[in-house]
Length: 338
Image 1 (cartoon, helix red, strand yellow):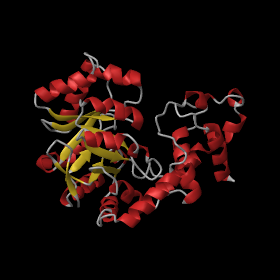
Image 2 (cartoon, rainbow, N blue to C red):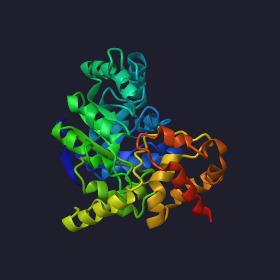
Image 3 (spheres, rainbow, N blue to C red):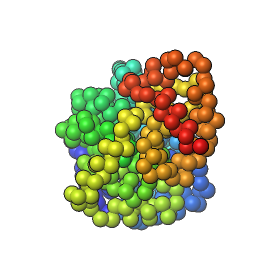
Image 4 (cartoon, rainbow, N blue to C red):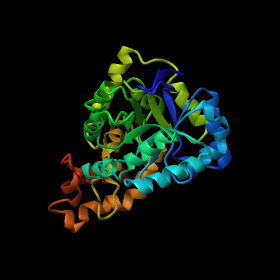
């Protein structure tokens, strides 16, 4: 396991982080085994959020007795001081700890949201207050708009930033990672499989591992998945492999979707998932989880072409800050069922 100093925090963190978002979907004893095996094998970065169902409670139940062995990161999605403070206090109780190593202002994707979180009665001030009280050590920021995140972290108010980085979403490399490096921040990459679309798993994990990040969070739910992820990081990425991965990322990222979720489909098509998986689907095919997504979305995808209000001017495309051809990609996705 590779360990690096996490920005200017002074902490040494493992290159692989345990993403606990999906643990609520498995039996508690399975979650307990996965978490403890991860700690046994040297993973020392645990990531969760108040919004991840009872993920925080599972961490408290399963590994709070080993609290000194891991760097604990959680998140608040609240924007105002009072609600954020209440959520952080609940998180401490749920995870059975007195201190959160990293509290992240979560899922900030618009200028309006950022301003609300940063104003005098905003969530950032609540995080600072918890830091003064000794219940939070460091404050981070998460979001899906890498170019906006790069601007927001440039004033030096955050210790860490969390962003997408995978073979189908390489966009953080352009501005965000260089700015985070200049700010000496902790750099945490998430979604190496883009929610279960990218294969093979080993190659998907090795792409963010090859880049200038400290931790790659992978959502894991079993001992076998922990083993698979650790195995992918066992050897360093040499120059030739890095170039091959970067070439592949340029191809798979041609859809240009950042998953900012500005788009909203009136018939319920989950557009970002289809956009991001479009080139992966054509190049590699889909993992079982990705195929399951397409099967669940089948009726909605097939309905896209016939939805009258979108025929002349698709509603989703009017909301996209990147002006992407969403309707065309969704209609092409209908061929997956042919």
